[in-house]
Length: 406
Image (cartoon, rainbow, N blue to C red; front, side, top):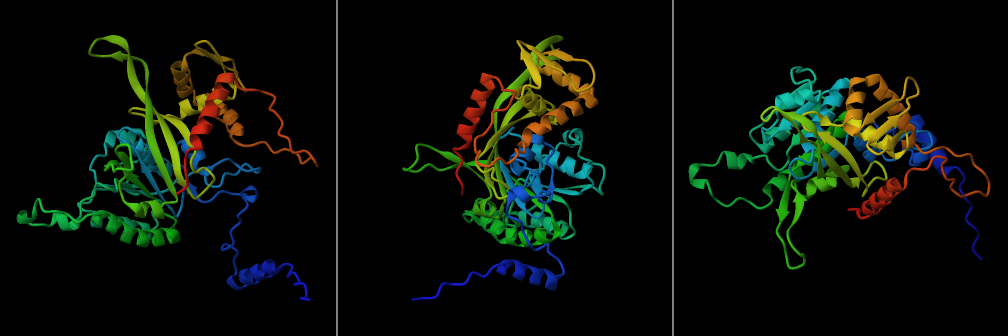
């Protein structure tokens, strides 16, 4: 009869202590239990409360999200059709990084950055110590610039866009070679080769690289019902990116605006409703989830509107017909007709907006319940949201479950 195997108690703990003593640091050790995190993974806030929440996932019992922003030392890919907010998100992240004391390199192969718009979003376009705009001629030149800046520890590098760069071979070709057949997948092959070097570099410097992709039509086959779309850049960006996010404009928003041509107040399109889908997420459990955020044309990501919607959903702001009523912790009751007027009020009164922001944040953090032995049932909150809000949440949850892991 075989002897029972003696359990080695504390084997990993002993080995861990020995390694820590030899290396004189325990930075190599990673805590996998998200509920025990006391601080998030080092990250760069995007400037959007919704996107940061989507990337970071729900805060744990300590109120800490795994990664509420763009993870340092990692890569991300963002794609979508025109006017989906890709460049706006990238510029907003750049502005937020600079405002927090960081540095940004923006590699613009499309030569399409509008200085006035970037400045309106808060990008310090006139400060070369914080923000650098590069418009290289070729893909290889842009990657070389990015690698150099990454080696020097720049905080954020944006590639806009990764499928629009010209190859060095095609730029230097002779007139006789114009119109000749190019090699299939040549751009993707270069990205596959160079992303390996970039990833190794940013791992040590903490730089985050964001790649913006346009979408292109994928030729239909007998197995599909029609043409589909996929982001440019090839499979390399799929494999190397820790975050892959698709942006889609689902509707426009209008408000009463003065038209100088007609000298009348008219309903004019002032923004868009954008759906962000987390196609891949290696930083939290958000993969497959979708969230809505808002963009104001000419102004950028509209956190005023996002905070308002969260407050309405949780009953902090009460709806009565077209009227919105809010009782702030300090001061008199605020009552405005319509969301546009309430938004203007919050924008003109930043101290009131901060009050509303502080009221909203606790609802994004799960409450810590006391442990009761034998009790596993979830308790209903005292304040219930309205039926139409519940229906919306159920629909969003159902659609979010359609995402599949790669």
